[in-house]
Image (cartoon, rainbow, N blue to C red):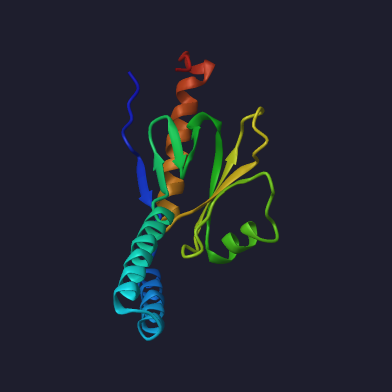
Length: 167
């Protein structure tokens, strides 16, 4: 039986200022419409825009990072831990550099512009052309610690020198 206990969990929620700014944008749109179209139409369009805004911001902020005993899930992607190499914690300048001028087009990216820090996770799968994953995180030190601990535990369990067999 495989344990699925989460060693780490983070949701990349949209910050409150985005909600405020976009709500004010819709309110501005309502002000422009209320003088140009019938009131009921202005309210109807505004309601539809608010529903769409809520759905879009919620969907964009729903990306999750989860480390279990066997897997790393980052957004819609997942990878078994035994394929992970070292994880590097990135501060804002390093994150900006690796996501920009030093970027590798084959890397998997889970980036959010409102999160300035993250991790770079080396991929050690000879069949995977992806050199690394670059993942935004508000708690990169905790994420890196969870990944490094889980990956080393997984590799120790699958190492033939320890007599264990891979799952």
